[in-house]
Length: 181
Image 1 (tube, helix red, strand yellow):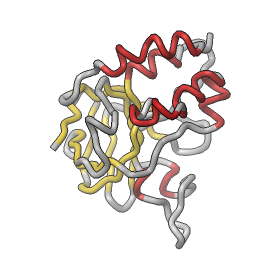
Image 2: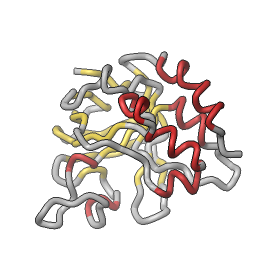
Image 3: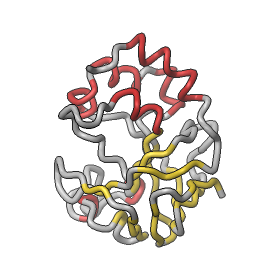
Image 4: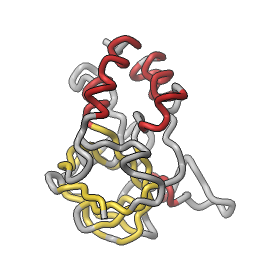
């Protein structure tokens, strides 16, 4: 069942009380093609190629003028409390496909644009590009979930997650900590 606006709004206090740093990385995922999700325990990432095996390298949704993928969207991180609110595994719903899930405050206040974070042995930089959710978010999780993410007073909380650019090659591993540098 898709969450209604009241349920979403009531969860906001809990979402905003998530840890500010040192949160466990969970559900590593890469998307080799549209609608495809592969879950792994280790995920190599690189400055040049982004997430290994991910469609960003060959069919990115945001491109530079030369047609190559915009590095600001190489990695997508979703807050666990938001995922738990909108997604019910095993009920035919499609996982959102974010690179990983973490129970951490992803707001602009906690992770300003340009913040460097360490995920496993990789370094990521928080992007200035806003993850505003797409029509797929609406179809999967409902109109209320889409409007909640895009609500003007909620934009600063990055409820649909945070986008990052890989600035140092490395490997992200399930169970390791996401840390602010």
